[in-house]
Image (tube, rainbow, N blue to C red):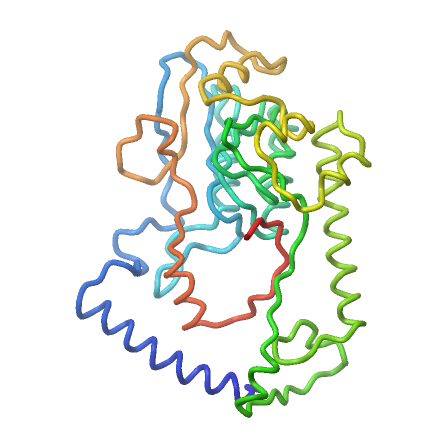
Length: 336
């Protein structure tokens, strides 16, 4: 059953969608990518690209860039690219069968993302390590916060660039309430529910204290899991120390190292060398090939080109307008 507010909103959205779609089709505007055509399909095989090195040993770079999600990157008319979770799992599956890969570097540049998506990637990395027993290290770029840091806790070592921002250990459940605004223009929500808490978090109803406590208990439970993951990933830190650090704040690379949240600070070539010196790196480590898996046809000749999750914000917003759904979600996310 649609409320009067949602019916009105859908009418506005419908008209807006027609205008936008007409503009795109008639003018050939390239802001919104359309599904199909030249976009890669989910069945396309990843190609191996060599970034540097000529040795027989390989180190695989897996980019974790952008918001961590288990949702497909969509064109205006539908999905055109698999989710970040699907990409990472695909990369790990391929690396599992390549015995020449002697280590994996997770190149993380992410403010975090969905709780479940972050946890799945964390779990899949652990599973891979148990099966292959090769080094997996995390390298932080600009930002490796919240879910980005959560994922890194599956790595053997955690490295940061001098200008990295990290931390933001915590959980957020974003809610907006528009009841007062709707009341002023005479729009009411007459949704019928089976219980007092069925519409918990509704933007059109005032939250009760009981509902606030219910949501806070869920946040607390997820937060406890995050702290436990950090506790396992940073064994030199006491849990009470982690709890003091995990109040949601962010840290510079220097602050993170001082507090034991990362192992070292430097640059990518240094991290590659350190990776080859880890105890479970099998090989000489002389000029290993740095490789990545990509569907891109463009020339790859340096590590800073590695493709990540390039989701258009405009595309995402328009998709939500045209195909609206629930936006309520728990996040390991730094979102200032």
